[in-house]
Image (cartoon, one colour):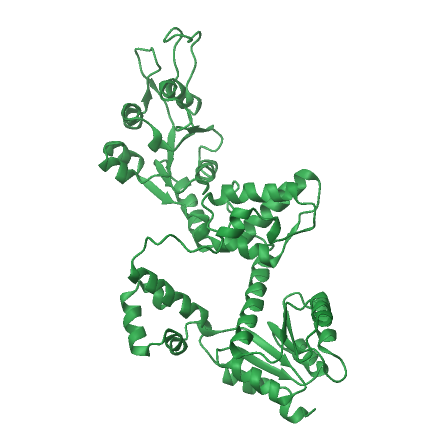
Length: 470
């Protein structure tokens, strides 16, 4: 054991060596091994791809580094003179929640692997191993660590977005700002977005932050009411107006007088109904079915759609003049797959919610399960996530929800490639972005991986979307 050769690197020298731009910052790794040759080999392989490297030749030195520096991953030999790597792994697991451990050994055995896993090591790598095997194992461990950190970060106090809207992503911050601005006016608002993205929640938030908050908020699902009944439901009817109209009854617009009416999926209405809605928007008057006189109403209209209304206009399925009337203030809600930073936050929220209803402690999610949740496409968006978490909480008896507990469709489709409906240039641009991301925007290393020179890479980045060169 030679501490002069395989001891700690001086912190000052290390920081000078790793002086990088913030976008290039990679994780810090501590290597612990009593063999100088192994230390040198691991250091060379890991530092070549940008990791910050610390080295120690025994557990005592390793503990001093851990106590005085920020370390993301500890790679330790299994057997060393004095305290072993198992002792170090156990100490880290008992005292540091925000650190990953990987064990390497020249004496692999099933018993040793089991012991390593029990102490909290995420990976168990047998010598000899190739540089590719080492880097792959390190990436897996660090990926799980980042997932764990993101999940833990979802426990911190959230930015306040009212009325059930949950999220801390940049997209949700923009939605929050939109709600605040829209609430200060009485203008008509059109909220677009895929099903399950929370359009009604945004509408409610706008109403309850506005001056109309003390008046009714009336949601109407235009697609769920039969066409022959929609006019009566919206505007009301007088007694005897049609068969079964045994009494005069007010419609949703009268009910919402002084407040807000939310026309959910307005694109599902017929052209004839759109004419009547246009009259209400223009004149602020409604005419009950069977009546001969109109009636004034003071109602703010919020509308939503999950369809492309301009495309419907071209097909003659939506009136252009009505579109211009409802399209005063607009916002498009992002799908959940574009809000990956919010998935862990929403998962914890729904798990706590449904566990409380059942009178039990909210279950935890394994790193693997969180990875699947984050990778899944979520065609049903937040509504789908909520339903899945409810099912898991109800049907799972264990304290930890793991990958096998997830729906099979989710497990099998989370990592499936998208349908081949993109151009070659688009696929190439996306792949270049993924390579740059994997090497923390190191263009020299990215060019090497892509097997092109830096000039060619710059040309391809110039042709790609601006985000590809960030």
